[in-house]
Length: 64
Image (tube, rainbow, N blue to C red; front, side, top):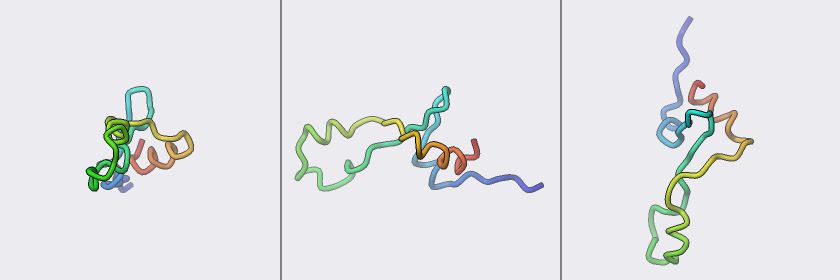
């Protein structure tokens, strides 16, 4: 049987914790930052937990 390959784009964007939650970086923090308030850019730092409805598809793409 051939092995299943993980989706390389998904593996770069998502991380699975030990308990099985899916984490992702927040959007809108890459460019045009001088037009955005500092409060917004600070709120976008760090990782966030993925919505429960999307976790099933992401885990399938990652082969978990």
